Length: 159
Image 1 (cartoon, rainbow, N blue to C red):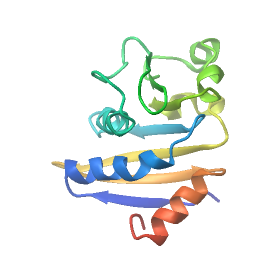
Image 2 (image 1 turned 60 degrees about the vertical axis):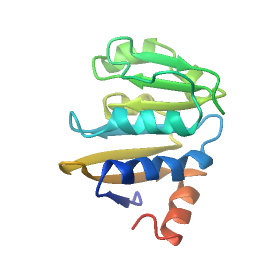
Image 3 (image 1 turned 120 degrees about the vertical axis):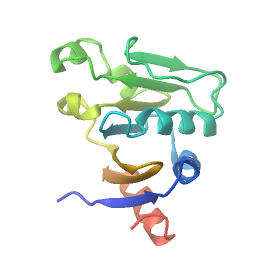
Image 4 (image 1 turned 30 degrees about the vertical axis):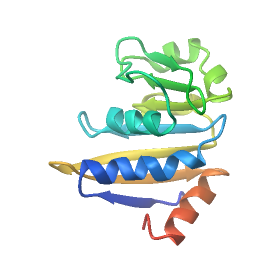
């Protein structure tokens, strides 16, 4: 059974704080699989992670381009939005090059391509509770993601 951890964000500042706490854990090949309703904050979390990775320039939603690559930060960032893709289309894109590459991959609407995602990843489901309040549900799969979440729980960051 998957372990579930929760991070409660009462404000945008709390969501940014979560990104700041997660960023130091990110290493080459890290995969963050984001899901949540439209407007839940997937892109905002992606932007915050990019900011803390010191990615230069504007990071915006790759909705129509599907994949945006950002260089120049601590690690390359591969930001994907697979909402408009079928599983077959996503599979044809050769996403493994990103998943197992030298950077960090963030996939928005990740559940749409779940069968081709790496087994090892951190899945984050963002629930909008109204206003700026969010709950981030973290499901780690494999090391180091399980260790990240366990450490955050030990430090009182997640429940």
